[in-house]
Length: 249
Length: 311
Image (cartoon, each protein chain N blue to C red):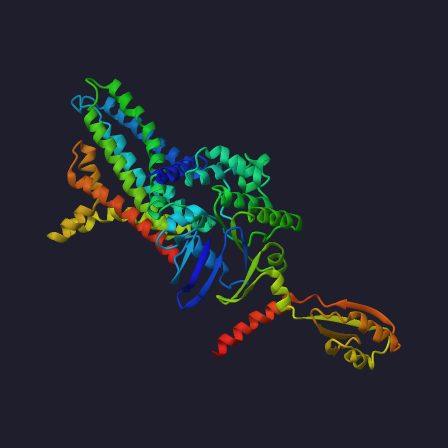
């Protein structure tokens, strides 16, 4: 446990000296900020047609979740691939650290960085709470934020796992992005076209529905929680196995 | 401290090391000598817990390298051939991270101490990316020493250093080797002779021979060779030299000089000189032929290769 924390801490610190992390943080916060401002404007101008309906924070969390698909591959691509390329993996693999601790530490470091960006967006629900009466639904806000955290944790775990397979960061980036695009968009189509149990399988794999139809609407389904935790376990398992396979080569 | 028994490693169909057995005691500096690709790095990687062997066993500091890999790694300091450094960290940050990973109390203090030990204290807050090759090698060594390991494994520690740095690095290693076990690899013979208490010559994954540098020298360099050169015609010189007691073989060289060989221990150079001068030749030069440890090493490793082919 302590080793996981030590590796996570170094990785977290490393994000703050890497330009990619700043670009990613800037991009997420810029887009989320614009969407927030637009949402407020829209609700103000159309207050009459909307029968006094108030905007919800799910606009922000929803956009954040979508942006993770595009940005997390950039955050995870170098985690283990670059260690392998630089030869520093040899250092970590001969230190008294278990392979799982190494992979989990890298994952946790990435998660802490995403959580830092996410923490900045908490200003939006606070602003919104002051704009609308009688205030926003904090339970919905909490559930949406929890959804974003689980979404980020799953994406990061898959990203770390794929990064462990490669020595080349760019290869890791594109494979990670492809898998995210598949889980986020493509899986939805066969779910609609097919029928019976096959459709059910694809429907369950569809990441969007686990996020938008549950957490981001203020409902926490056990199946969604299980889904995200399974992805985290799968990603960390792939990563640990890939590191072990590296040792044998 | 290190016991290796029948260690074998295959990379696919290629056998990198083949049934390797040796051991190293505490306070001993053991040199691994061999050409590139002989299996030195592979052996070291197995002993440091980086990769498991295909067959055979080894214990380091009393722990099995496969079953108790983590315990082994706690007790071993390792400097790989490509020094594993993070260029975007300062020397101090890097060593603190390594100290943290090894659960050393007061990591910062220990990092400073270790930096002082490798003469880098004044560069503690410089980024490793700005370091010269010699400094990188030293910070790599600092990383291997940070937890005061019982066993130190150094893969080509002097490669790429300038002569002054090589001397410095050798002194550091000798100092460490006084009370700890050091296993180092090199392909430079003279280096192995200078630092090591014992040398293992390895080729094609097998140990060719194993001895102290002194014994190795006298065993391998069974004979000494000397070249003499005279002014003008060297006709008949051959004959004169071969008559001197102790001279084993005489060869005429194309440039008119003569090379002769005598057994180690019976230095017949004065007699040869006397004989040459008495025969009326003008002796211009007499020099030993570069004690050819290198040649014999090549000979040994080549023999090994041909043996393998025939068997």
